[in-house]
Image (cartoon, rainbow, N blue to C red):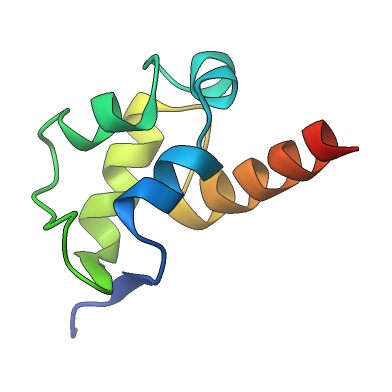
Length: 87
């Protein structure tokens, strides 16, 4: 079976803004998004444009260190959280 990949179009700075400290403290084991990036389970070039990660490993990391099953679940929740704060 071929590997599937996650492609993230946002920059690391944009991800820091999306995954705010409030969001990260509430839904993960980290104080901010950078802590997640340094947590070590998945090696990702966070400076790349776009950011590409192997889906299975990335989802495994998210599942083990957050309240979410997958990166997609976490990403969509962060978008909703950000929108709820903007209102």
